[in-house]
Length: 79
Image 1: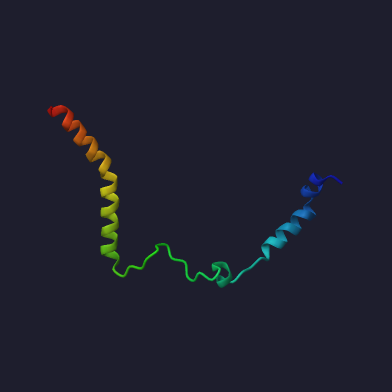
Image 2 (image 1 turned 180 degrees about the vertical axis):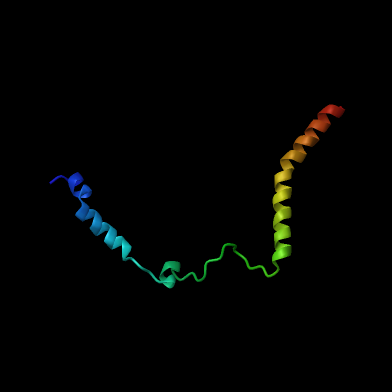
């Protein structure tokens, strides 16, 4: 029997699905001993000041190219 026919057979598919379906792990095994997963690499206690700092950081970083373009246009018009 050809390998492609074996892969297409419904019996083979059911065996693969049933093996994958019953694979369960505990949270300690999934984390591999690294502990609790956090989205940021540091802890913050006050969320409002932290959010303000993040917003300032992102707005200032996004505005730098526009400010530079404005400065270059201003510089070329004046001289």
